[in-house]
Length: 333
Image (cartoon, rainbow, N blue to C red; front, side, top):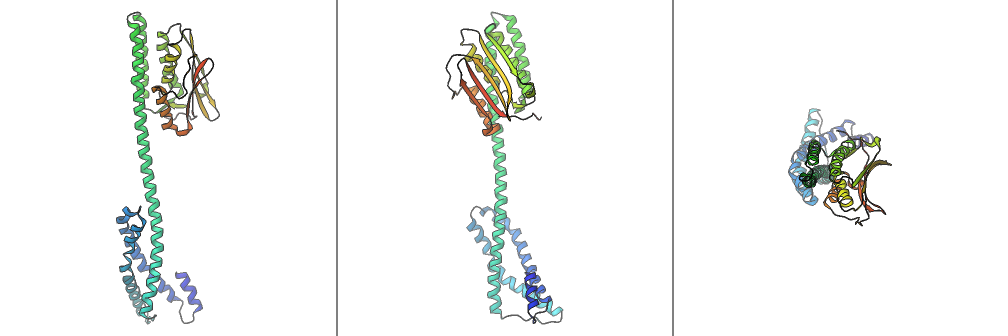
């Protein structure tokens, strides 16, 4: 406004060059005081940001005080400055001044409030989004803990049931299994505070579980491990594979009449880590199986990776295969 006023003064021989600087500076000074007051009072109206018409109404009511106080303050300031300079300030009639300044102030205040409303709405949206993300993260962490809590008792029950079945017929084997179960529980307790672990640690726990189950089904099962060594540092959800191996023993070994084969594989597929647990079986399964182990694994993958991870159960001619694909990431403690 100062620049525009100065340009106009250059074309008007009746206006001295410094006068538009004084006029616009005095208006800017008084307007700045009002805008600072508006910013201090703005917090009281933040609750109405979701109802714009109410927010603007509360701010617009101050125009009734702003317009007369602005005109009086600005023109008193101009008259005083002119008097200090030994000059007389002449202006249009007061009726014109009041009408002109009222329209100008209404336009400027509307523009100002529109800008402030935009900034405040964006700040509120960002704050609400951050709160929502924090709440979603807390909920996801709570759900993950709940799912892990469901897996541990389920796993422990099955392991103790296996040991119990051997206690009276082969105490030495039962004792050996109990020692391995202690090792496995110790490892799982260390990992229990982590959502993710390395594939190496996950396979160590899986191998201990396989040894426990292998003792129970001596001569009835063979395990084949096909692990890409380059993948051992990859991050995987803690205790993700144990319920899958448990299902393989339950459905592929317990129900089998002949010796069964279980395959555990890990390899890289493009940008994904593919994990496979397969057991020889001719029993038909439903891909949409809702057993607690598969259901919990699917839910944990969804919470940790969203749509970027999948768990597929498939019946192939001679075996049942579970394939897990998740984004390949190096584990970072």
